Image (cartoon, rainbow, N blue to C red; front, top):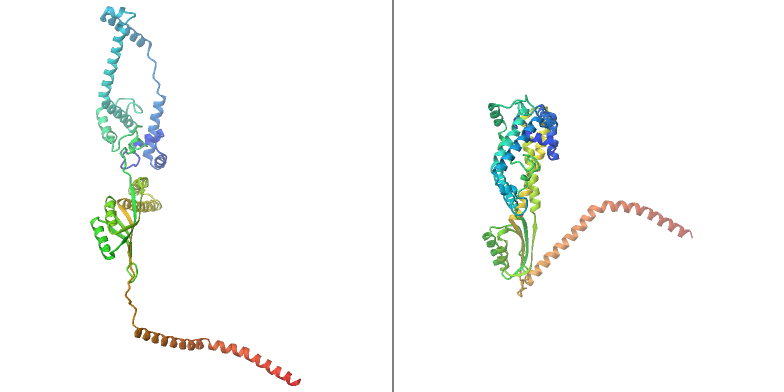
Length: 422
């Protein structure tokens, strides 16, 4: 079975049957087995192989073979007695044979360990080849188990080697459990990750020469490869001038930049802080990697599977959703890395303001002229206001006057008639 046509590799099926896959990957493999007939047949064959291995019992040694082994052992024992010196065999106690026996055991153990150390690569290669041959027998070539029971030929062995070359030289080394895609120890990076610190500083400086300090600030940013994120300047006449700025400088040049900024004048307040974002960045990188792998698998499914239009549209929608998450996480990653690479300086520069004694107010004639003009404008506006008021409210007032005046006149006439009658 080719992994190009099937996203699930044979070793992943074996790990799935053994129950060694993570939960998410196990669900993915299970869903694939429900849809793919080839993988289902391979899983059934692998399960049958496991059952045969579980039910395989080692037969007892025949009686005649056991007797032959005992006879051979007795013969070797008699030869050993003839070979060893008599004083070693006859020594029953004391200090004779025990040191020699201990030395012999140590020597034999050292030879065995040396032999195993030299042969371990060959044994590992043989074990891998033997396992691959058994899997190949299940897939269609008769192997030691699950086939016709006959040993494979050299031609079949070469064919199997071509099919499973990825297992002999995988792109990812097998972990301590023997899995290529499991939760093994190869997924953990043993190297120590440097701490990622987002540094922030705040300065409040009082300067004597405001104009020179403004020019010096620009030159400091140029020398240290920084830039201004935000700047507000207040340069009102006959008032204290000030600058409030948010600066970005490389993290490795923060100390030098602060030293030059302090030289501009008297430092009133200063503060520095650092936020560690190592874990946040690591989590974001892991999520981004998983999302990219998910996108690749979805694109492979979209290219290799020709199903219903609804299924294709569902896959495309899922790809669009995953792509949106990837772009959002990439933006977050770039933001975190920018915060780490460029430190932030909140700067406030204020001028030592001294009030001036010179009288800069206008002359008396100018002030009189301005007052006359202002009075004329005020009178004209007042007269115009009355006209506009009556023009706007006159009809309403006239109606109310008629409504109120007529009853009032009637009451006055009645009162006069009553007074005349008395």
